[in-house]
Image 1 (spheres, rainbow, N blue to C red):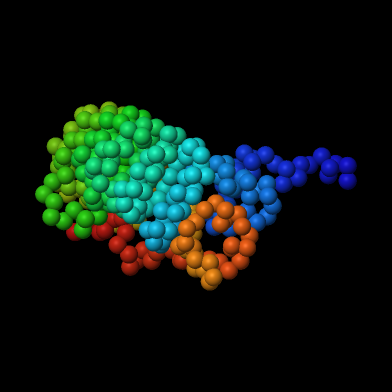
Image 2 (cartoon, rainbow, N blue to C red):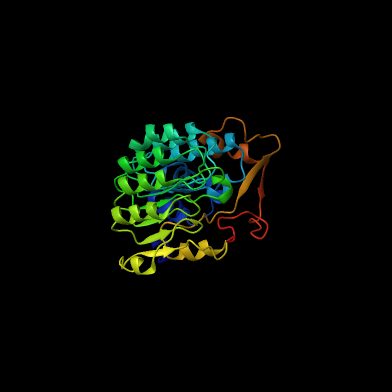
Length: 318
C-alpha cells in the first residue's frame, strides 16, 4: 500500500502530460469522452495541449461547410497560437483560409486539399504563413501561378509542396507551365514536389530541376507531356522521379512510405446527429464542457471509401 501511494493520480498530472497522452486518442474521444471524466482532463482538452496538431481531414470530407467552419474556429482557438500542423479538406471559402492564416505563427505543416481558395486571398495572407515547411494545395481549382508565386516568396522555409490535380479538373486548360515556372523561381529549397496530372511540359520540369538543387522526390505521374531522359535524371544522385506513367491509383501509398510529409488522418470520419441538441447551432467551448449538452447527441460513423468505385488520386493510365 505504501508503494502504491508513491504513484501520482491521473487527475493530478500536469496539463502538458495529459495533452501528450490524449493525442493518442481519436478526435471523437478527445471532444466527447475525455471532458466528462474529470475537471482536470476537461481543462487539458479545452486548452492548447491537445491541439498543436489538428488532423480533421477525413472528418471534414463528410460535414457541411458551416459545421466545418465552427469546428475549425473552436479547435484553432483552443491551440492558442501553438498550432504546428493542420490537415483539413474542402475549405468552403476564403474566409476560412484567412482565419487559419491569422493563427499560423507556429504552423509548419498545412494540408488543404480540395479547398475553395482564390489567388487573391493567397496573395493577401501568404505573408502570415512564413513558418510553413510543407503545403498541400492539391485539387484546389481556383488557384494558379499567382498563388504559388506568393507562397514561394513568403514561405522561405518551404521544403515540400503537393500540387496534384485530377484529370477532370484540368480539362480545357492548355498549359500550366506558368505554375512550374512559379515553383522554379520562388521555391529553391524544395526537397519534395508532387505535381501529378498538372499540365506541365518537359521544359517546365527542367526549369524546376535547374533551380531546386535539393530536390529529392519529384512526382510527375500523369504529366504526359513530360519526357525525361534517364541518363539526364541520373545526374541528380539524390533525386527520385515518379512518373509520368501511372501504374494504378493505389500507388500513392508507396509514395507515402518514402515521405515524411504525406499520409492521411488516422481518425474515423464522424458526424453529429442531435435530437434536442442541434450541432449546427452556435457552438462554443462551453457547449463541449457542459455534460448536459451532450446527453442527446448521437455519433454517426462512416465506413472508409470504396476505392474500387471512387475516383481516387490516381486514375489508370490511358
